[in-house]
Length: 402
Image (tube, rainbow, N blue to C red; front, side):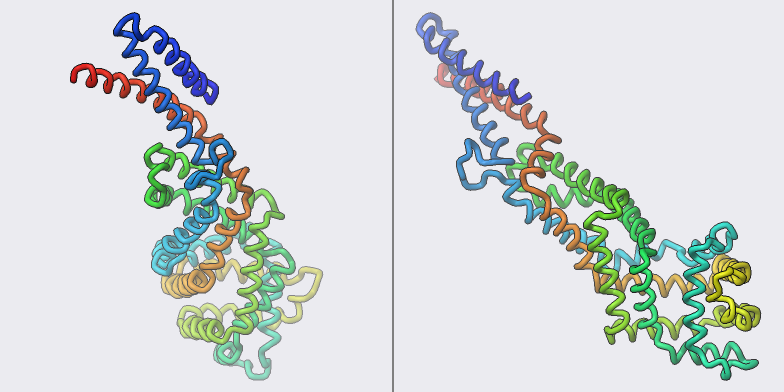
């Protein structure tokens, strides 16, 4: 298509010289001369405009040329600001989570013996339960297990424990499935908000992009790039973006252990959860069957506790699945936690997008975008040549009439 557009321009130049040579033979040659002359001007102007989007015409550093490579970083910052201002703000996150029953979904998963009793989940739950039980004073439990347990939990600051658990999970690479789920969720969110992203790019595009109609192609290229990035993160365990997410999780683990404000919020959520009557009823029934044997078996390698723990997890799943009051409390806890994370770490999350785009090589980005919209760019040149010629004929007609 580039050769076709250039060939048409050369054809107009040849036609111009022919018409100029025969201009005095017949008045019709004047119209041909006007058409070819204006067509060359239109073709050259559109060649300059199209070239200026991606590089400096003829290698000359003319101002306001090489628009896309020169503004790559600004495009990255605009995308990051858009994600921060439209996705990772508390009202949006809360509204999204308000329609998701996380507790019921987790309960249904745990209630299924084939899933809730999986080896990975049993091992993780066993380690957590062992740490909690070992932190309690067994003498204070006695026959009043529930009251003693809740008093101990009220004294136990769970935020540092959660931070240590998260650090251990990261060290053991158990967080990778969670990252993959978040990436898939990001892909679905991006798909549902494509029109909003397109509208933002259209509003931020300069006059040249809008005039040439390339803002739509640029929006498609940006969205395709984001989808490709998310796909690469899923299939490539060593993707740099995963490393950034791991850095954010490591910082969260650090803050859970050392940030006073975050620890206080976690403590408040813990107190609300303990005060829920449904939790007390559930725990009192489960604890009587688990307490005496769990400490002795949790850390044993022969797996004798697997069946009992799987049964307890299944019972917990049934409570989560069938108890609306418990679901309300846990969903509220999850919603507040995730909203807090979006507020506290939203800038770090969107910075991943900005830094990733900024790391892209300008020549590579330019080549990919130009390749995606290249045919239409050359049609712009062809149309400019033909439209310019028609305008030249129209001007010549007006000149003859006047």
